[in-house]
Every structure is written in structure tokens, then in C-alpha cells.
Length: 506
Image (cartoon, rainbow, N blue to C red; front, side):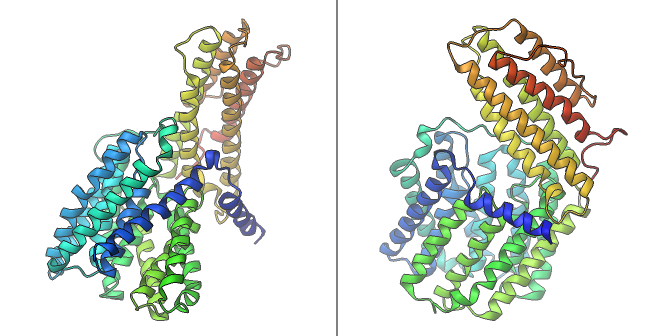
């Protein structure tokens, strides 16, 4: 029990005390409330029904949430392309409304294509999510061809509203440097992670679709949606299992609060206020806690069903059951359909992070040596992104419920040492940015040792530490380089046991 409470304490700290440089999360969430609110108001002023306004709000939410291209121009292009993907999918879903077999097969095809599209980077991911959610919303609304004009208008008006807010009224990204986006591990055919995940997601969604329809012929799409979202932003079976657990946990907590939502009886003003709070919560917590994000998503869904007048205890229980079915489908898929091991992904991200440490060191040393072309700051931003991917990959090992205490301890040690590497690297880059910094002749030797240590770690060897006999470093750059050397040398022990086995074995 103490371990579980310790894990919850860490989650609470990540959500409410986590650093928010430049108030990025706060601005991200506040802009979402503004953009989605504008989209709903525009839809209502255009004379659309409540269902049309709900569709518009969800379209605006996706336009503001899923578009993550590294540049503002790229984000604008992706946002503009969303209707080009969503409207044909919406038409297909409406046309097949009365043909269940064709509808289900088409839904699975959209899922497979949506996951496979991730191989094309952030734009492919955004368009794939929008295509899936468009089909999903059509099931939610039981949309037939007669409702297509209204739904088309809702999507177009809402994406346009989100575009105006994001790129016109409040484009805070324009003042930020482009965010580096690490490419997924390379491969071809079934060796490519995104291809394997496309097969897994389709298989898991197929299970969820069949079993979900046995549970409920009306709300079966909840199970499919749960399977889909569990696969988003994961790369290994460990990550998927943890995400599935967190989705179910967030849903359970949200359903526990369902009676409070039902007490509103769909009253317009308090419901609208709580919807704004839920939107803010989704966007503000998404980067730090999937459980909390799912709590807000569940509350938002309950509020929408309250507005539509169908919220009741039976519906809440059904949502929990369908979420469980979807989670089970994802678990079975990642365990038995072309599994991608945690070790494969973790090792790939750790090696890329270590190589980035070396690149940062080399560019910082070149800057100290007088090169004006060297730009270590860019490498530091890339390193932060890679370390974020390492933390996500290692999350299954450090989870409070993981019973493998030895691997959990080693994984935490690896994360701590990688954080040490990042801290020393940032310090070195800060020194290199100082125009008054001097160049010490020992820098070249220290950089060479860092390079050798990285090559040893990425090559499966144990790096040698040969700095104990040197005099203590006086120059700040040398002090950071020596700290880097020590962290890299110590990393060899938790990364590989004496027998040579990797950090994770499955």
C-alpha cells in the first residue's frame, strides 16, 4: 500500500506542481476553452441543432488538441487539411449507417489506416485521429445521410473557428522556437513499429467491436474508442498496458462522480460552465497524467449525455463495461498480435538520447573553441524531447504496481542518471553560450572521453572512467564534462547486468 500511495503522490505533484515553462500548458488549455467555446457559439448562431453544436465542439477540440507539427506553418496546413479527411469519412459512415457489416469493416479500415498514418509524422497522426473520431461521432449521433449537410456545416464552421483562434487571435507558438519532434524507431515492413501497431489496433478494435456489440447494440462504439485511444502515443506492449490501466482508472473515477453530473438534470448554464472546466482539465493535464485526462474526458461525456437527456446510472455502468472491453481488446492485441517488446523500444530511445548527449557535447566544445556555426542549444531541445520518450517507454517498469522490484530499481536509476546527463549537458551549453567563456586545452580530451563513453554504451560495452587522477576542474565547462563522464560510466551498470542482459527483458 505505501508504494501505491507514493505513486499517487507523484501523480498529484506532476499534475498540479509540474513545471510549466512559459506557462505553455496554461495557455494551451485556456486557448482550447476559447476556441471550442467560439466554435459552439458559431454553430448555434448558424441555426444548427444541439447535436450539430456537439459535433462542432468535438471537431474544434480535435483541431486544437491533436495538431502538433513542429512549426506554426505546418500546424496551419494540417488544421486546414482536417476537413479534407473528415468529411469523406463522415459521408461513408452516414451512407453505411443501415448496413452494419459494411459499416463495421469500414470502421476497422479507418482504424488501421489511421494508425499506419503515424509513420508520416505528426501530420499523419493528426489526420488519422480526426478520421477515426469523425467515424466515431457518426456512431454517437446515429447519423444518416439526411443529417450530412448539418454535420458538414458543423465541422467546417468549427475547424474555421479553431483556426482563427489558434493562428489569428492567440498564436503563442509564433514566439517559440520550433519544437523538435523525434522520429519513431526506423524499420521496414513489419519491422516498422507503426505498421505492427496498425495491425494490432485493427485486431484489438475488431475484438472490441464484436464483444462491445454483444454488451450493447447501441453503445458498442465506446469499446472501439477505448481500444483506439489506448494505442495513441504508445510504441510497446508495456506502454500500451500501462495506458490501458490508466484509461480504466480515469474512467472509473469519472463514473464515480457521475451522480453529481446527473443532479444537474441537463441545466444549460451550469452544464456549460462545467463543460468549460472539463475542456480546460483535458488540455491542462494531458501532458502530465493520462489518468487525470481520462477523468475529465469521462466527465465531459457525462455532461454531453446530460444535455441530450439520456444520462442515468445504467448508462454509466454501460460505459464502464464498454471501456473494460476496449481495454481488454488492446491488451490481447499487444500481447498476441505482432508484439513490440518494451526492451526494443526502450533501448532504441536510450541509445538515441545518448547519441544526442554526445552531439550536444561536441557542438558545445566547438562553440567554446570559437566556431560560430555550432548551435548546441538546438541539440539540448532535441535531448529534452528524447528524454521524454525514454520516460514514456520506461513508465511500465517504474509503475507502482510493477511487481519486478529489481527492474523497477534499475529503471529508476537509469532515469536518474540520464537526468544527470541532461543537467550537465544544459550546464555545458549555458557556459558555451557565454561570449566571455575561455577555451581550456583539456576540453578536447574530455570531449573525446565523452564520445568514447557514449560509443561504449551504445555498443554494449562498459565505458572506462579515467578521470580520477586529474586535478579538480576549475573551468565550468570542464566541471560539466567531468560530471557527464561520471554519469555515463555509472549508466553501464543499470543498463546491463554482469551477464550482459539489457535493462528490460520483455
